[in-house]
Image (cartoon, rainbow, N blue to C red; front, side, top):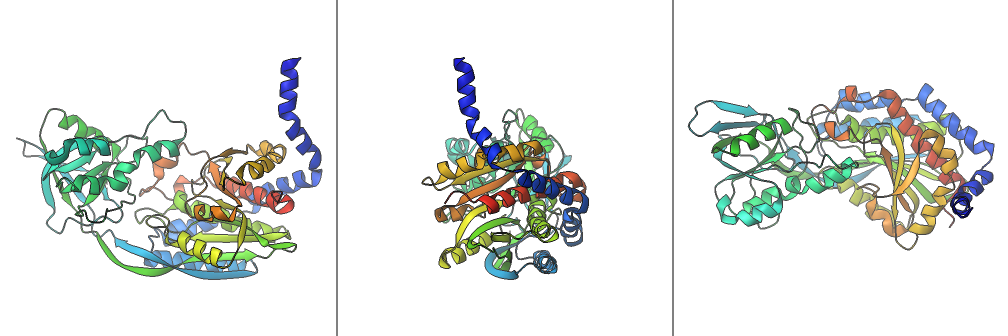
Length: 462
């Protein structure tokens, strides 16, 4: 009896919630999914971004084309306002295809490796460089070797943890070597860096991504190699001396002005309450940026299309923001946040989609500690409406572009799909439209629109 009462007490909020929501909400959410699955335009728009425009590195010609296209598309939907918000972005060019070759001491044959320069890396120069390779697993191991690394190429062979169920957690634990490895190695006189690609797959696909140079530390070139090549190199280094030849012509250029794309449908009752949906429009240059983050952008645009197509009149202002320069600087997110605080705005909720276009699982939520508990509790009222679609809520990060809005004391929400395959494509040349399932993409847009609808209808109890 005691166990029954405990379970009944735990279920009371959900039973009460089910009674609060009438059939109107359930039917409307069902219609959202039908509209997205039958009449959705997400795949069409993603094909344009990924295949017709292609990789959209901030400051590039392709990024400017993406800005223009998305602004025109959002205008065609008949939303109230569309405008471009300027932001300063760094510019980096990859240059000629990279070369990495290894030679075992005493042998004349060279073995080519699959490699990509890391974003913001300097180049080796046209003649390249050659040095002995030294393997490390972590940044701390670099410090322990110290001066032994002088004149060497440091090979960071830090794996993503296969045992982590949350692939983003595994990525976060291993990403430090890629982001900070070049400067850490350069402190001790290293001349170059190779980094194991961040994926749980063992394959020949190299993954790029940003690095950050420390002020006052010499800048050295850095490249990622495929996980299969990392395994080969590690095996050789166990018993042999290996020379590495690196060549890249990438370069850092002067910063430029780019733009966020902002579209809004004004609320009829509480226009000062903003519900934001967004993704980042830039991507790395080597693929089409289909999952990262074309999918997030078309999710957000599809929310705006669904609102208009379903003749829904929101009570609160629904704002779509396609951020520029998430990948290597957050220029767009910073510009948006600065403008929002200067205008005294209140984002009741901000939802970012930046985990790919896979099957929806729910949403992760964060917020200012003074309001998070109560506002998060409000979301549980809606679980009976969302659970039929496999959607739930959990505490966790939201998105890099919206994280700076926390002090406005709304909720920051990250769209969470099934991410087990995400890092197979992340920052690679194979992040293209064929990696995206149309139905999964459409379900993601429907999930976001369903949450927007509930937030708009019921607020968060302010």
